[in-house]
Image 1 (tube, rainbow over the protein chains, first blue to last red):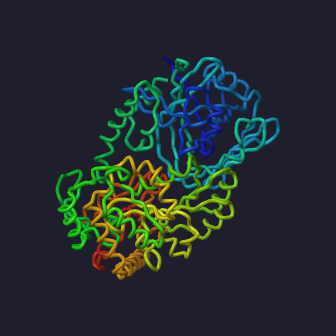
Image 2 (image 1 turned 90 degrees about the horizontal axis):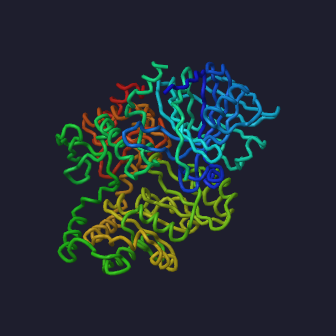
Image 3 (image 1 turned 30 degrees about the horizontal axis):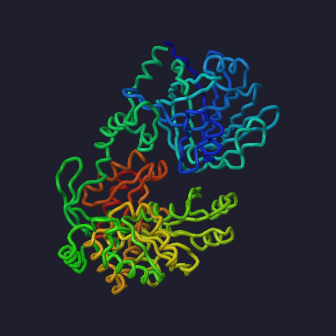
Length: 223
Length: 402
């Protein structure tokens, strides 16, 4: 079984509190949001600066809900699991590739993604249809080489899928609450009650100079 | 691809995970997480997690006998870990009261407090606590935790959280809440040792029509002119609607309580499930708590000694360049701010004669790891000086302070 590898320069993630009611509106049946505390779930935004892949270099923004991972005896325990409810890419080739291979739901136009470093912070700006969609900034802390397993759940029509993803590279992870997100009122964010997403991430992850590796997709039984 | 595949097979190291990774898991069997947890814990324990739950074989006094979780050897250590803020748990009057109660009542209450488990001394302790807190009535719970769970679930049905000690966030959150509103705060926060900004919190709560509950687990019997707690300290005893506390900290026993109006206590008696589905507090414990409460009321100099000790430690830590964050209480976090190093630091400190525990994520945010210190009135200045010197020397060796 072949693996699919995406090399990246930067990948930044912010984890934000948002209402569980909103998470449940987004999630398909069978997936449970992880709650930080009663009534509060986790919205995650990740922005990639891919430098190499089967479809070349491109930028990608992934909007997700953090969900309960699927744990199987004898298998490596994932760090966490997520349900990407909207993915946006800067190229059509990247979009078609991800839809065909990973069944990921996409914003069907190219978006603009800009990374702006400033000291020990990195800001990613995403725009669609010429209008800003989201700006997210994260700060660094200390850097360590890691190899972490994540799970991504996808739903396409009446079929459900699971992708096991290994993230390797240098990682900075912290809960200093130094980052920020600004989500604009835009069709891109229609699934979110934007005003109810807390704008300071309780956790910021910044990975650089690494690779994201997908194991072959697994189709799950659909309840 | 082959190289990437081999990397994928890399075995996880214990530092890739922490307790939070083993809480949620879907699958075919509810025990699927046991195997991954066991595998992680077998590696995590010798790497520092053994420092938790090391058994004591003496009273939680200023010096304790502790069995090392790694070597099995028993050591005499200076105790900076126990909640025994006033040194009451091992006072002769307290022990004697408990012994007499054992002779009179036996060991346990043998019943729920709403059925056969309420004894005369339970009622007396509840009356005495209410009197001490200057409230109409009090109700006892088996623990402070169950007092919170039982009380809040008896009057509220769901909730949202606001950010730590942050009135601005409270203002924002309350603005979006419809229906019943209850703002829950602690008098002293147990991980940072900072004191609740109660005046600002009460102001915001009242403007939004919210009730205020204060859990004075770490502040009852210590703060305020009469020791009633942080609410008394700020002169807000009447503005705060519900008062919770515990007997496990300053009284050195166990149990929790809620104080308030008679109607409130009667209602909680009917609907506080964590209470009435538990056996009532053991009578010897209740007798010891009554004796402890009498000591608190009769010896205000104990509080004065505690605050003198706190001032001494704050001054000495500042002189040594040791960061204790925002603490202004007897709970002092010695900030290490390094999740990987905190266990080694704690191990070294224990090897040099101090008993204290590391605290790491998820009990505190990532990279906010610390050694938590509980200062007691029972500590002597020599005890505290020894503690400061050991901590400072280890932190310097590890490059954590100057």
